[in-house]
Length: 176
Image (cartoon, rainbow, N blue to C red; front, side, top):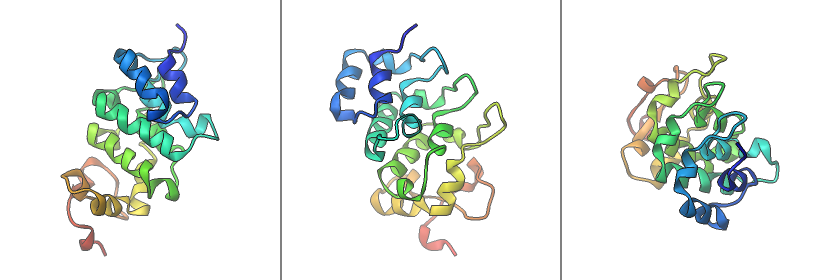
């Protein structure tokens, strides 16, 4: 099987509004079809896009991740051939600058779609590395300022194990 146009557009770093949305609209089922090599859905491709294409901007990556999760939240639950979820792949390239902006809200959208992903282990036994980065950068505080919903009031406490149990309703003002 060859790569579908949706996979190719996402891998090339296209913004959602720069043709990716049109490809999705023409063939929505393509969002649920894995590519043949790593068994990645387009969501996996978007999550790992900065690794694959150094010219991909964070905003492009985030726009596609956010849109795909919005249209196909079940794709956040799909593992690749190494049992990695899209959240595992997002963590591979995340840094403070990325997590403090649009990409950070995309990470939280993926977590909202599949909260169990924060504890999921891949074939190597690793949990998504983005979880440690979320704790370190207190992204949840920025999200809480920008959004007022159940996930936005979550807190990932610093210096605790980052499991689903540590994501609990709280206010950022309660942090030490």
